[in-house]
Image (cartoon, rainbow, N blue to C red; front, side, top):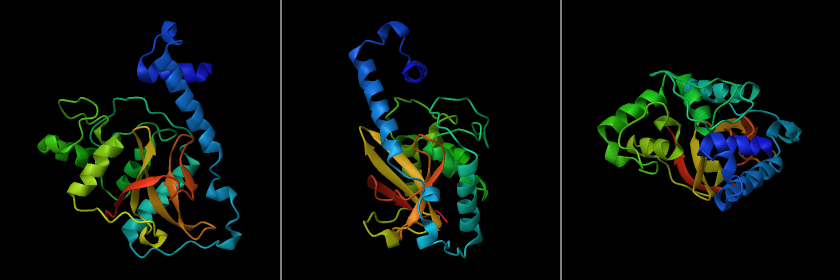
Length: 230
């Protein structure tokens, strides 16, 4: 509980004297539920992959490099930290051991020379009105704009990278980017790997709170975006 209080204090600006307020209690309850929900998702690495041990060959070198980088993050990024951080521009990043869901995509794309920090910033600067106003911004911020799922969704759509959202797992191919609505105004993002899970679906590389994982979660939440950049 003390750890959760510290997180809420840093992320939302609550002072110790307000820990008994209804809003604070609501936020703590949400975080507890979110943490508990993560325990029910079993990483693909812990599942019985003997049913389908082979990865699917990826013919595109760019897609293969992006996927390989994303999967490699599962051995490095072992935590989740949504704190606002001032980072260099372009090419800025938080420490590789931590990050948020969008950082998985940002790092994988940088492996193939696509800097989403710079790409999103430049597009937002020229087309600011096209992007969400969820954070009451009046100007672009290269420290955080590219690390927000709604902004990435708009960027991918504006670049013509959108694909139909379906319930057919075969439509989601290695290298595709998927976004979800988690409920409560929260969104999430991940990248499709070339590793088959026991269900036959491709596992997703994502970070939803416990570090970057390779998991069979394609249909765990409501899909709200499907993109193929390469």
